Length: 295
Image (tube, rainbow, N blue to C red; front, side):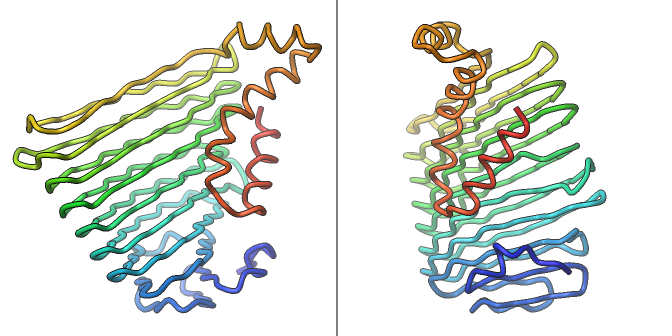
């Protein structure tokens, strides 16, 4: 297994490939189970990891930041189950990278206990076909979720994403922000769902989906759905899909920018809120270079 140098430079990392495991962190690893019980920032590197379900446990009151980097050179299926215990906090940045045009299937389940938090950053700049299915269960009071997802598709990329948040207790909170860009013949297909079951009052479920189509053959489809069975809650959803704002483009052109420069500036403003949340200079630079090569 060849681990990228930018990961090896970090004090804490975990690398998994088939039966090979390298654990340079304080986390405990055994039988496809990672247990984090302290405050720690760790890179998790998956090299064509498709063996068994990877289970991650964030112990009570643990504060963990994970950078999950998955490299794939063949069709890969990743299954993950993440449990965040009472008052635990997980900040998870995910980047799925293909060495060549290929197919990846990702199924992830998150379970949150009392007053626990999940901050999820999904970077989808995958070359090929990607299927992502995420189920998040807010199982106890005051559990909360924030998702930011950036999907930049180009060429013939085919991306299918299903997100479903289940509010299974009172006073739970969720927010999903999806930022989508389609270039070339890329097809982006999204189902964004939120459920608040009866009796789980004072919960709050928010969804926002925005998309820019940069080519005639690009396609973005978003179906936001709320399943609400309780009155005393807050819930909203929406989707805004279109091309670059012509008024913005005209204004920048009138200031002396070329059309290429103007489009690039508008797109930078669109993606920067996501990039700035990564809080890792190496990964931020990588993402910006990747997006520049795609569009």
